[in-house]
Image (cartoon, rainbow, N blue to C red; front, side, top):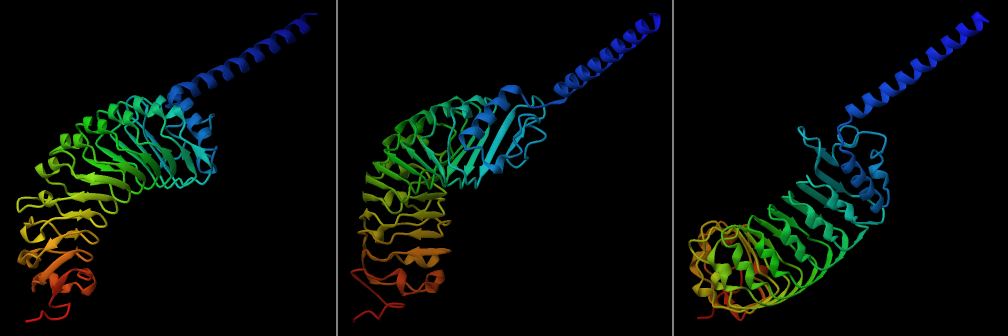
Length: 342
C-alpha cells in the first residue's frame, strides 16, 4: 500500500515537473520573440491578400517576424521592435493590397515593385500610416484613381506610383504634402490638367515625372518659380508656352518635354549651366536654334518634328549629335543637315 502511494507521488511530481518545464519554455519563447503581435497579424493578412505566395514562405505565424522572416522583405526597429519597412518584389501570385497595410503604424517605408499580378485599388487604409516617408507601388496592375487621401501622409518625401493602370485626374490635394521632394505618376492613364495647386511645391519638389499619360491643358506658370532637377511631361497632350521653365539661373539638369503641343520661340530661350538632357521632339516649337546650345554639356538633345528654322550652330557637344535630332523642322540647315542655301 505504501509503495503504491509512493509510486503515485513520484508520478505526480514527474508530471508536475514536465508541465512546469513546458510552461517555462513557452513563456521563454514568448519573451524572446521581438515581433509585436499586432504587426504579425497585419503581415499575415497582407500575405493572404497577396495570394499566400511562395516568395513569402518564411512568413510563418510560429516564428518571429523580426528575426526569422526574410530580412530583405521587412525590418524592425531595434528599440521598440515594430515593423518599420516592408519590401515586396517580383511576387508572381495573383493578389490585392490588403487594408491590413494600415495596421502597421510604425511603417516608414513601403516598397512594392514589379508585382505584375497585383490588382485593385490602393486601399484607403494607407492613409493611416502617419510615419510613412517612402512609398513606391510600381510596375503592377493596380487601378483606380491616384488617391487624394495620400495628402494625409504629412511626413512623406517620396511617392512613386509609376507603371500602373491608374486613371482619372491628379488630385490637387497632393500639393498639401509640404515635405514631398520626389513624385512619379508616369506611365499610367491619367487625364485632365496638371493641378494649379502644384505651385505650392515651389522650392521643395525637385523630381516630377508625369510623362506617358493623357494629360491636357497648359503647364502651371508657377512652375517657373523654381528649378526642378528632373521634369518629365513627355507623351501627353499638353500645350502652350513653357519657355518659363528655362532660364540662365535654373539648376535643372533634365527636361523631357517631347510628344506634346508646346509652342514657343526657341531663339529666346536661355539655358542653365547644369542642363544636359533636353528632349523637345514632336511639338510646335518655332524660331531659330540659339547659339548657346554649343556651350551646354549635352548628353541628350532632340528638337526633331517641330517648326524650327535657320542655321544649326556649330561647335561644342552639339557636334556629336546626328541628323535625327533635327529632322522634320521647317527649314533648319547646315551640318549634319544639308548646307544652308545662300
